[in-house]
Image (tube, rainbow, N blue to C red; front, side, top):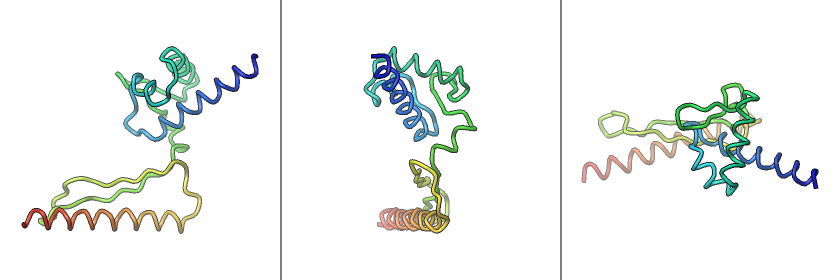
Length: 130
């Protein structure tokens, strides 16, 4: 019985870490409960333990991975979306679920995000001029 509970606890903790790694702005407790499907008391207890271990921090109303643990959260590729006059309207960001090991793959992802941002910028420019 203890082994099953321990394994479940480890799985629950890793699920929370995975959710936090995909949320650079952090997540509220209620959102973590909703997404994970775990009971609120379980999520709170896990987050408290992860905070005591200096893996997670709690700022105001959101939980975040501490900076040294964020490297496990994957990589981020960004490009600006610009208006016809060159002003930046927004940004397009792709976050991977884990580190990208191959530099060639990282280059392809950078180009993909840049190409998508250009396409969106052009599309916005067409709508603005219409």
